[in-house]
Image 1 (spheres, one colour):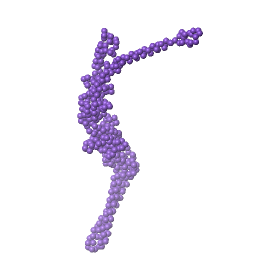
Image 2 (spheres, helix red, strand yellow):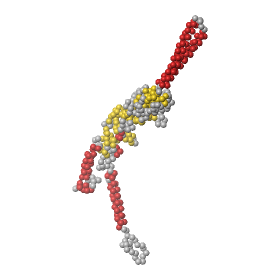
Image 3 (tube, rainbow, N blue to C red):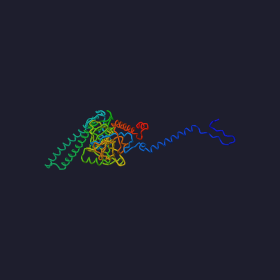
Image 4 (cartoon, helix red, strand yellow):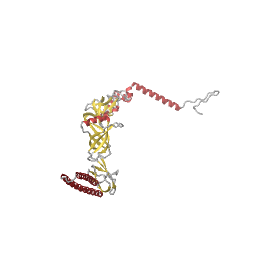
Length: 435
C-alpha cells in the first residue's frame, strides 16, 4: 500500500486524498526564493539609482566605469583641390579605314599589324601596269590633238594676213578661228584624261592618310581589291594625341563654362580602374551643345598627348577634372564630421580635462579622405575621429596612450572607495576597511 494514500474509515464514502509530494515542496521553495531575490534587487535599485543605471553626470560614463577610448586628429590648414570625378571613354582623335581608290590586284603589303605609321607612309601597292598603259594612251591622244591645234593656229595666222591684203573672204577666216577653238577644247579634254590616268597610276600606291596605329590586316597579297570594298585594307587609329569623353553634371555646368570662357586651362587626369595609378595628364577641350535629358549631363571631351601610349581606344578610365583650388582651408578627416538634427558638428577634445565638447560647424568642399570646415573650428584644435558614436557633449574620454594611466587611477580610486566603505563596495571589503 502506498504510504502517501490514507485508508478510508469504514462506513464513510469520501475518496482517498493524496499527500503533497516531496518534489512539489522543493519547487515551491525555489520559486519563493527567486521571488524574494527579485524583490530585494528591485528595492536596491530604487534606493541606489546611480549604481543601478551605471551612469553618472553628462559624460555618459558610469560611476567607476572606464571612459570611452577615442581616436583624435588635428585640424590642419591645407590647399583643397575642387575636382570633378567622372567615368570616361577613350576615343581616338581620328579613325580611318584605308580603302583602294582603283580596282586591281594587290601586289605588296608593306606594313605589320599593330605597327605605328606616319602620314604619307606607303602601306601597299596595286599592280600598276594597266594604269601605266592608260596614261600612255592619254598622253598620245593629247600630243596628237596639240599638233592639230598648232597647225590650225598657223593656218589662222596666214588667213588673217591674206584678209588684210583683201585676198581671202572673211568667212574662211572665221571658219578657221572656230576650228582653232574646237581643237583647243579637245586638247583641254585630253589633258584632263591624261591627268586622270596619272592620278589612277598614283592610286596604285596606297599610303597612310593619317599617322597612328594600324589594325589587323583584312586582305593578302594577290587579292583583287577595289574602291567598293567595305572593310578596305586596314584601319588606322590615331592614338597620339587622343581624346577622352566623359559626362559633366548639369549642376556643375555653369562653373565649368565660366572657367572655360575666362580662358583658363583646366587640367584633366586619367586614372585607371582602381584610381591608384595615373595613366596620363591632359587638358579640358570642349563641351557638347545640349544636355542629355535622360541623364541630366552634358558630354565633354579632354585631349591627352598620350606620349607613352598608356591610353587605348575605347578604354574605360576614371577622369578627374580640376576646377579650381581653395587656398588655406581648415581640413579634418571625413570621419570627424558628423550630422545631427541641428546640422553638421564635430566633437572637440579638451586635452587638459580629457572631455569633449559638441561644436556645430559648416562644411565646405571635400576630398576622398578630408573635408573642409569653413566655420566653427580653428587650426590646431583636436577633433574626435573614432568612437564618437558613444559620446555626447561633456563626455569624458581617454586616448589610446592614456590607457595604462587611466587604469592605475581607476584602481587607486577603487581602493580609496573601499577603504571609506562607499556604497557599491563588497561587504567583506567594507568590513575590512572598518576594522
